[in-house]
Length: 602
Image (cartoon, rainbow, N blue to C red; front, side, top):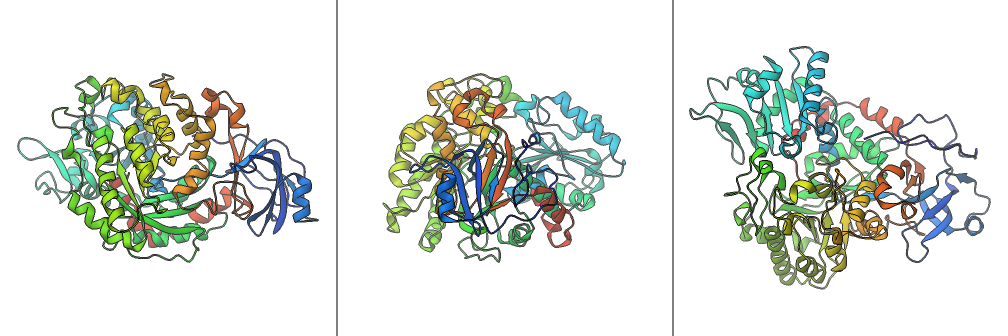
């Protein structure tokens, strides 16, 4: 991710000159309680007034939108602040993320080898070499982001890593979060060479014919056993790492997001981040269904505009990249699936379901009467059908059919038109994942799946045309936060290589922007607060270098740059926020460190 370019020169105002998020902020007076903000154009995402030139703000909320003269009528005498931005829009919304744990997984002391940072295995090896040169031999090395499909090689074993790292402790975490690779030095340091650990419930270790560990662990319980002592030795400040990911999201123009794997033990960390000066994100929370009491209420000192528990999250299947999604069609036998360790004879199918219907029904019956917004992770078409069947029964059982419940399906990579139509009839929202297509689309089409399924992966047009409420997300840390790239992908169907698959699944720029603003807000049940620039809403904005509707779609990510964000009527000052986070006491949050690497919530 590159830093935003410098903001163009701006006229001095009573509130001073704003600067791009992530750069130094001059010593200027604070923004007044009431002011008028201008830009080259204001793209409101409000169908009643699509364009404006000025926005009046009072006490952090929008009180007028229109011309400068119209805004002055509402707040006469208020100072006028020229943002200097060519375009002002409502802040982008990523409705499916994991901002706290993504910070632990991708920021120091972890080192990223994700494919968007190191696209080839040779580049990964260069990062390994640099890390060894820069760290003492007795300091463990932790890397996150290996992807067998995109890095073009099987997951490394202990023997593979020993050839690279020699006699030092090193761990390489899979980008999916479902696996870790580790060196023989780590095995010996735990006494696992003479006394291998048993497989924990819900996890496992790869072993040779004699039962000895081969250097790969699978799923959260086993991964945590590998990572816990490593993270304790590395130390670091979890709040600082999380704040760095908040800053990444802010630099991408995001002002509201969610945590789709919330648990109550994370509440103090989220409260601390929300209380820091210039905190850049509002966060809606979905508690994991495996929590002791997922339906329990949650209240936050930060207030509901900053932090709110919105629902409960379940997983019907797993990840396409490791072969455990529930599909009615098979994986292909190819070099790609072989490299990823995906066995077409066993991968996919109904056996990939994570729950029985009885288990899902019990969770829905416990949570639906409490008013929670339910969310199902579902990638394969069988998993989507399973989720819709369970939803329809529970909605009918609890008198919610025809109500504004907005239950959710996440990712829906293999979703079909008839499934999207059924979701629309049931009032179910669908959050799609453009990154799945952008990074893996060339492999999905003809190497992982037959073209009939793989080419149309992430069927944006089918979803929009079916009438379902569609949002777009990045699922941090599985892909870097990038709303503008998501819009480009949904509009062009271009992958990272520039190839196009199933162009008929492209949607309009307006539909894609809505999916990252007002429709994403609807999915979060927050459209009364954010998602468009309209009177009564919170003054959350993103400044852009160009108007997305006037840029050739294939160049959107290149030519539309984020210049800064505003939250609650104040321009976000990321240096101030990051300084506070890194200066905070790490001790109350240190126990989260291993969790951030031990498994991605999806």
